[in-house]
Length: 518
Image (cartoon, rainbow, N blue to C red; front, side, top):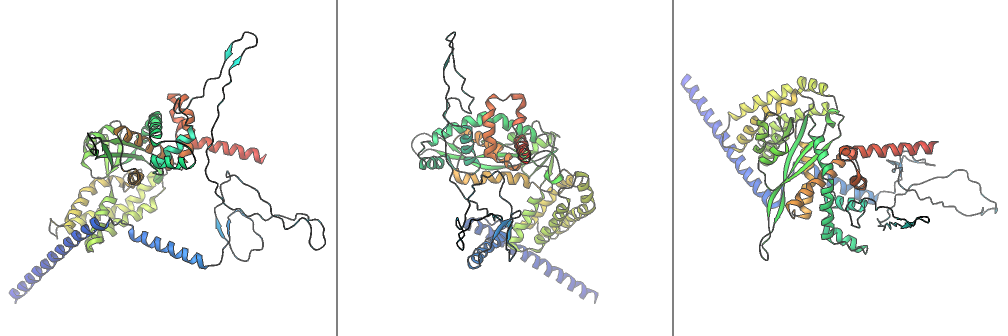
């Protein structure tokens, strides 16, 4: 009887192994098929299902609005009369927008008796309108003056300009820079837009302006770099850009793959007081020497992916690695999305529990975040490592699932520091967000024309994206900087930072409001 039970047990084990091997082969084939589909039909984002729902919802709302009765829209501070229903509210329009007052009266005299009217009150409705942008020409006159006594002749010096001897003003130059690097409009398209207004600005002329202004603004970008590297923790990543390689003869020009490196500082999540900022650098290759050079003065933690090129910087001991759990999750998500393997789905859910704790920790101080993570996240984190090792022992080491588990097990020890340091994050999403504008831009201008052009782009991205991170209008700030930088003392460059500009604007607005109130 015992021998029969043993035989049945062995048969069941063999049958289970056969089923597991079959499932593994099916999962592998599904993954390959998914890869072929992605190559043929385009990539599938992790959030594509959510995006599809948002697009469907948007279309339904448009359809609903077309058939529904007109609904009044008022600002939250607007006064209305004879309301029969609660109106849809909106944020009030900015106070600094120009108001054009229009008064509509039914008639000059009463149609019943011919008497005059007296005002009882006024209902005011605000309507947002658009006036197409326009250009102006500043005529800067410098009269030559002769002294009536000694006949000496004097004349005022020309004011400093962003580009000496050029006819481009600071605001126009800021507009060109932001249009190219902030809104991804290549210079030839901008040239066409200027031509529509009867203004002759060739793409090559503007390219020269961009290069000269980028060089002028480089010291502002360097100050942003210094600010970023003062942080206890930074976020770093890189992305590809095409670099034009000029050849000999007709049709010989080709492109090579270059890189833009991103180093960001953002302490918002742990209520840090330092303004966020991001620094970009261009290189013609992805060699390890580039991040090593960029990080040569930095000391602290660096959130990053598993790129081996960072290892030289880690070996110095100055730069401490903080692995990204989003990359770990992405491996399992891709597997589950394509194969529906239960183990991959379970891994995604376990990592989600860590993010649920981070939702509670967001905007708390470092000490509070550590306490929360130690109590709730650490048990989940530890159990995740144990569970993954158990799963790895049950499957073939050559499967995609085993590859994802090995990657996770290699990264988890390097992600552990976040449990003990409240200024660390669970992922490197800050750097990945900083990479997106470059990805959008390269779809529009296709390639960098030269290495100097790549360096100019890195400076422009540094300025524009840092302004955006601080919720500062990059075009207005750059115009303000370009108006001052030629005469600005080099040892006071921090006075030109986006947050310094915003403080200046806020102070002026407060002063104006105080005068109006008085």
